Length: 389
Length: 164
Image (tube, rainbow over all chains, first blue to last red; front, side, top):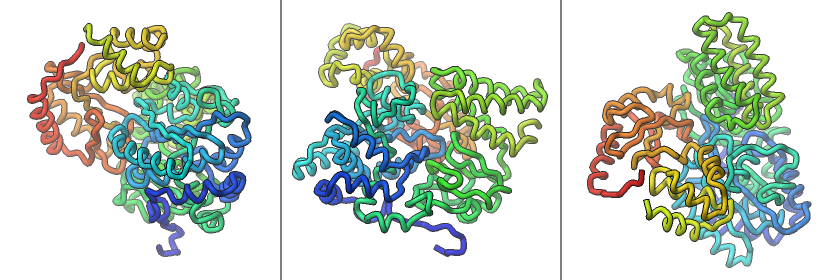
């Protein structure tokens, strides 16, 4: 890759070494648990689902909990609009993910693990089950006690929130819990539980393979490693691309745009809309704009009112309805921008809606309601005219 | 209707009777019966020792657990922003045209239900849709004609009984 554009392609996630013999796991279960935890901490790995919690700490907390009933859950409920990177991992290198889960189980002392797969990915079940059968056979040969089960979602976006996911796995409505207690203390069946994203487990497995030193060569101080990006919209290169974190958005657009890019939605409907004038000052990574990897590009033919309307319809439908700020807030934001467009409300009403979205950010119970303000304010503030006329 | 009780019992035997077995049981009923009927939910409640309201409350939370009768083939067209940009409307129009129903409706022969749904994970290959669990991507109106014709031909040789 040309170093001048500051965008570095990497090929480790899908690269070599998806061992059906689970050699990395074999090696790892002969190591000290504390040593592995320290490696994951030192690697600087942060959750790849979007929230970015340090993975090593999560494992450490769960390992430190008393008792021997603990769980590992792989969050494969990839529902963020514009995200499809986990689909590629699950279809191409599920061994790396399963191996990462098994290493986590070894480290925290769990003998039961689950993959919570979104209902939309039901078509993958036969292949995944076959790989799990292979894994169980390999684990038996290693004398390693772990059972991994598949659990299906049924079309609820909010179940990607880890506590809603756990509720759903317990056979209930997928309504988020109050935190604390966090799942590492009280998770599935009230027991210590590590919930990590598909890509996070792949990264953990990779760290055990290449070592901390190699891993931290990728990315920047605050954003170690590489990241899978789901790139879609007005781009000639739609698909999953693995890039080092810490790049400038302008470099990204130079590579993936169509020479007419007006805005990039970073992180899906729950993320932020970055207008052209801010491409150069936006860094993609935890030091700037963190993302679960969804990058939707819009060119100048697109109406940003239309984009926002689509997102709000999505949130209004997917809000679980449990807490009032999110349930009513999503409805009112949607009705509000429609009323302004029809000129039944003055343009100044936008300010009231912005305040409402701020309230939702503070008062909503989970990440769904809290993040509606991200796209709402970043689209409204940068494209006021498009909202009104 | 009588066969629902032994069927639900067999599912409870297969998955277990703990609360955490509720979703897998409901999911399998929907996959085979295309609906979660009241009778089925009452039977599940009895088997798992839950109230029927609790079973319905859980089922109604999930968009894929339909409590209203659906066709044998449920078509879910992705309505994400990227799908819209790539021509979702033409796809839906074509489906309405061929099936002679509107979004949200089921064909009179009980074969197809047409729905729109949120992002199904194929934004790089829009427009896309699911027919039951199978994804179809890079759709065009011409492709829609072929795909539906395939299911129509397939359906005729299959006399699966539906429970309404």
